Image (cartoon, rainbow, N blue to C red):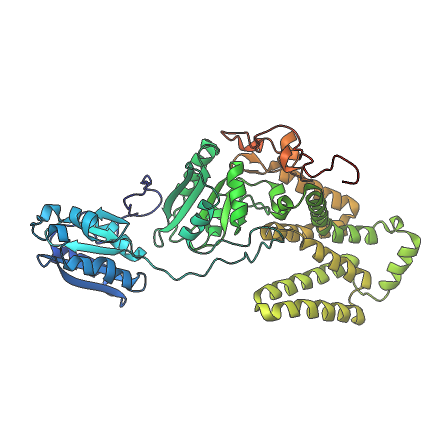
Length: 532
């Protein structure tokens, strides 16, 4: 990795990437012809490589090398090529020795803010492939790396997967530097740290760890760096690649790493003492560690007053539980315990199922699978017709199934309510877990009734109690019980009651609130006399 001046040098980690390029020596010799031959042998087969010879100050032989598809060509002409043609005015009458030429170019000639002098051949090639321009000079070993990268990117837009009614509307994009700037604009403290490492032998993707040094637990940072250092893969194309390598329990259906494309959500996690992992090329950042209650919380819960936020959060959690157990509960009661249904309702259900040729469990499974196929098709279709397909598909398929006698009206209603409840899960990866677990619960309920349903729920709960994320119990703050954490779990307590940061993060600075008690406003506009 090239280290520019004015930047803090990250420590090398030999386990992150394969630094040497085959056929490239560790040091360049300083002979322009031989060094250029080495670079050409590795890069010249590409049609977008530019190798341009020039006379520096009309005295020294040099060459600049860059990819035309990765750089700002106007900046190269204005800030590099043109200044190299003429000496600075204060040096016109002075001779420049070859030993001092590099320092003169870096400090007094070139108009590039980020420069670095390197002598390693692999670093030279890495810099060119990343979009920098390399200047080689005859007689000087190594070269000068100039940051001229310009890659097309989309603008800052509203997040597509995490909509907010009240709150910021900006979202992360695919460029790492832009994403870091969105966090820097919100966290204006000097100890906000960014550590960048390279992962991927071929892609050498930049991965950033973001945290506040005076808050985050050093053990958490050390463990995150340790897990990243063990990743040995050809390329990292998305943050999801990182998630699969660093999670504690890869065979669990529940996610142990939270992802978000909202800068405000990432900022709130950093202020709590968590660590954010961002990947160059991905608009989704990862939040570690993650516990279960994070996956049904949204930023709107904190933007609104705590009474409304608590009500909406409770309804959301109720919908998640409802979508998990409702189909299995319906099949269990219909198949094994019909006496639990009121008489009038039981007669209506029996009348609706009179012509259905399948058992209740088979009937519900067929409709569930049909809904999942329809949902997946809706996601993969173009946005303009995806919404229309979901509405028309549900109406047509449901009505046709009832009319043909393959399903009863009550079954269609149950599956429709279950599907609507699953949409209440804010996190897509957590919603998939609930959808997946719905099927084994349904089969258990169809085979053993309410006993099978309860056994399935007990197994799921035991699994949740077994999970952890970076050493943090997954069901925290329910178990182990945390009084401070319970204020932000099932309900959302007032912001002025969050005096401490989450205890399970073991932060260096626990205090989050600067005063004690309920804030009270003075009645400034209250009249002292009646009628005035």
